[in-house]
Image (cartoon, rainbow, N blue to C red; front, side, top):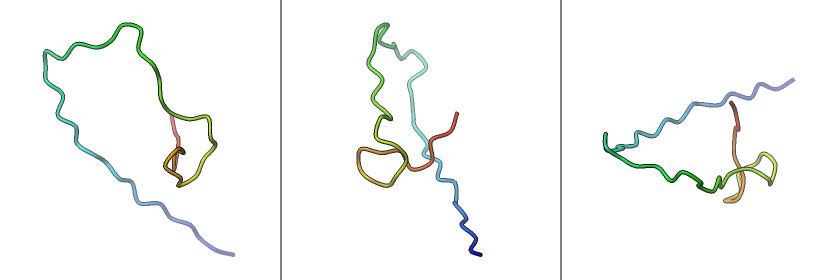
Length: 46
């Protein structure tokens, strides 16, 4: 039996209080299953 532990990694992003968001933007994430590749999400959640 083995134990796998993940250490959470949080990145602080500085978004200006008056930032404007694209109404019809494009979501660029997922679609290539879980993994550590540059086109994958390591621990997708939420």
